[in-house]
Image 1: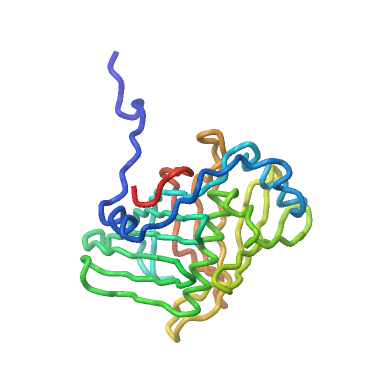
Image 2: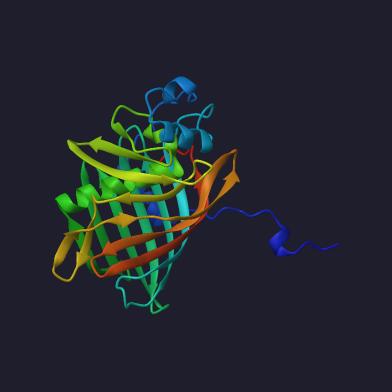
Length: 271
């Protein structure tokens, strides 16, 4: 009996060579192998954060030194703009707070555009180029430093909770179904509120530490990433996907909808 393509084991996609070369050049530290997380590591956390860590299957598993994620979905730049197909790869590290996110868009489903969101050494940057040569976006400065750092925090909450078990992380008790979490790096602190479902899994991540690129310039704007669902893979929970939403004065603007295609929590950056 023949086997259909959909029945065959899925071979994970490989990161683009430009992405791998960039990471290799950055020489990101992976850090030494870490001991598994224990119940004692959760002492002092708010009850809701403990419930979250237990639901995410953190206890008994090694601490995440670096994650690599592959996303597929769609993206738009304006509330009235067209949706563009999107394929994205990222690597985040824990020993040193760093994040490299490369996104490929198809403008008009024809013209390719690549965007980099990066954070390292306390500096964030957003760079976009059409056809690889024409710069269409280039942002840096304090607003991007905070915005990229809080996005690193968002990734840790949703993809690699063990990255949060570090002295740089702050916690706030907000009741049984939510908690506050913050991260401090390079003298800057950003934070968010995480809302949980009945099983202790994140429903949403909400922060006021990002700036929307509006016609008059960057404006500090509430930002959230509601999760569309959860699944079990490799012995732990991972999000099926979610959205990126600006909460503008005149209403919500969902500018990204992504599905998690692959996640590896034990990678060496640049390989």
